[in-house]
Length: 297
Image 1 (cartoon, helix red, strand yellow):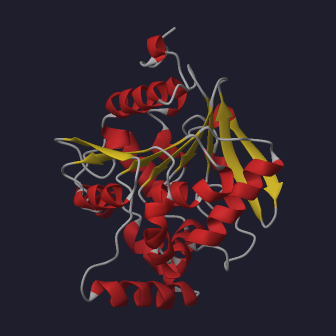
Image 2 (image 1 turned 90 degrees about the vertical axis):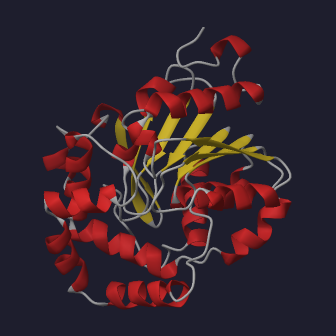
């Protein structure tokens, strides 16, 4: 994606910086002071996904939000490191190079899986998964979807075709509606910008094709870091029960479910999600009890 063309209208662009940490050229939004929070968007998203919670969280935290490799404005250095483990390793390398030590790692959807994978690499004090994608495809989709993604990612024509077919408002609205979330026109427009970009689509397909979550699922019982799973009861992309099943395997995890919201709950109801995050941070003693609400002092 072209930063020069988009920076004037991209959410929170005033906080954007770029870092060359091999193998990628990273776009990262950074602001605030206090305990460090790392925000990880899901597959096909970008930093715009955090537009409603980024600035409010900076009242109490240093907030760091990167675009994942090849997605948004991060330029992918190699297509061979889009899987769960290598992507987590590259994110950890970015943090260590910049001397960022996240106290709290927050991930949406596939970003939730990345947050848990990063536990062994960055040792945060807490993990938050927002409609975390921690399950396997069911039935025939379990083998068909990954194969389809591999085939699509290997073709040089498919990303451009997909971007052209998907990058109109009606199709984007249908896609977002299928997640159980209702976004405003600006939110829809931002996703339209993303899915219209061939490079962004190519990186998302590569991520899907290389994603292997079984080792992480097997490791869940050994993750002792306190974890909070936030779910939307209307999520049409990741069944809310997925988070409950994951939490049941972990020794120190809890689930909060909110009625009336879908997969993009952090975009639909940012204040609700911020309240959950700050309350969790206070319980972890990252914030004084009086700061359990955004901006509280």
